[in-house]
Length: 329
Image 1 (tube, one colour):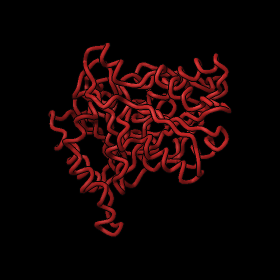
Image 2 (tube, one colour):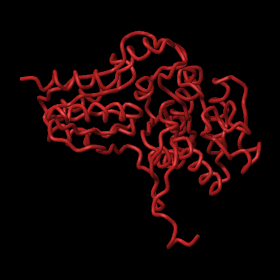
Image 3 (cartoon, one colour):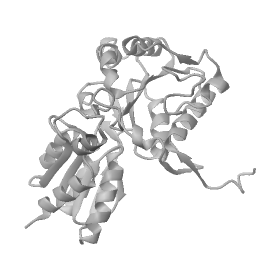
C-alpha cells in the first residue's frame, strides 16, 4: 500500500504497541535484546512480546528462569558491556529482588566511572491490581523515583506505550518502564508519523477550569470517569498525565494548577511518601498557597477478593469525593 493510501493513524491495543515498538527498535539496532520469563515463543505474560521470538530468534529474545535478581543483574551487566537489554519483570512486586543490581550498579555506573560507562537497560515491569492478590498487585513506583541516575516512565495510552518504549531504548542509563495489567487490553490510535515521547514531559489529557487532577498510568482512566461524573455536577476537571515519574514535569502541573486554583493527586500506590505527596509539595513550593487533596490506595495489602480489592484501590467515587471536598466553600 502506498503512503498516499495508508491511513494516517492505526488502531492497536496497549500490548500491541509495546510489541511494535520493540520490533521496530530491534530491527534498527542489533544491540536490543529481550530477557524475561515467557518472553520467547509464548510472547510474554500479556502478549506484549508477541512475534519477537519468531522475528529475531532465541539469541535475542531469551526466556529466563524465575530469578529476578539474576535477570536484572544480567541485563545491567549486558548493558554495561554494550548491549541494550529489555528485562521483563512480570509483576512489579518482584522487582524488589532486582533492586541491588539496578540501584547500586546500573543507576550509579555513570557516576562511578566519570561517565566512561553506562547501563542503558530498560526494566519493563507490570503493576496494578487485577484479582491476583497481595504479592502480585502493588504499585510501588514511588520507591524508585528517589534514585539518582534512574528514570521511571508509566504510559497510560497505546501511543505513549509505543513512544515511551522507543524513548527508553534511546537513553544512556537505566529506565524502569511501568505498565499496568488493566491497560493491556485497552485500544487507542497511533499516528503513522509518531515520534518517541520525550521522557520528562507530562501532557494535559483533558481541559477544565475548576480543578487539576495529576495522575498516571491506569489512574488516568479512573480520573476521566470521575471527570465525566463531575461535569454533570458543573465541575470542569483538567487532567494532567504525568507519563514520567522521574524526572517529574512539575512545570506542566504547576501551569495547570495555577489556572484552576486546585490540585488533586491520584495514584494507585500508597499515599505515604507517594508520587502524589511529591507532586503536591513541589507544586505548592512553586505556586505558593494551593488547595490540595491526595487520593491513593488504602494502607492495606490488596486482597484477591474482588470486593475487598475494589475497596482498597481508588476509583471514580473517591476522586469525585476528593474534588467536591476540595471545592466546597
